Image (tube, rainbow, N blue to C red; front, side):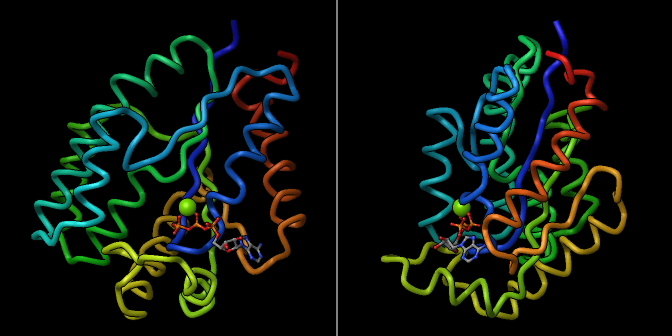
Length: 211
Ligand SMILES: Nc1ncnc2c1ncn2[C@@H]1O[C@H](COP(=O)(O)OP(=O)(O)OP(=O)(O)O)[C@@H](O)[C@H]1O
Ligand SMILES: [Mg+2]
């Protein structure tokens, strides 16, 4: 049995992540792979409940970080690691990069603290590939402007998303092998094509090319 791959989607609110998660999963399934689609915060009953708290209650930045990492630990232990161990592919809407940029760059928590939390919450687990949807914050805000009720993140000012976007750019620069920048301003078909081309390469790297 070939091992599964772990693929994550990142980017500011409205950049286009969720629009492409199902398409990427379907593309992998069409190649005979067993794929699990999931999201963060969330992916387990407990983590989904924590998501509800984080998106609605006012709280200190450290409280927020502890909650998202608690949700992540539950999700990783109960869902992500078991799936990878079974040889499944895991396609996840947001993962730890989101914490570095939202709780770190956005809310101002120290990167060393987040690094420690990540090391405790999911030791040794890094995505094989991360698609970073890069879109100017003003454009992303326009896309989500008509959402019925903005959550605690969606209601942040543009300056918050500028910091978050800069955080993503920093991570992509530091880890060019893992993180692929996707131009979020491209039409959907072009975005999908860029992801599919890259997934073809990833199948070879992960060793699932003729699965
Ligand atoms: N390439 C694209 N061109 C134009 N509009 C797009 C594109 N991709 C997505 N959209 C639209 O932009 C909006 C936001 O997309 P989506 O929900 O996928 O973003 P997201 O990154 O998942 O946001 P969030 O972090 O808030 O969940 C949706 O209305 C979607 O239909
Ligand atoms: Mg989304």
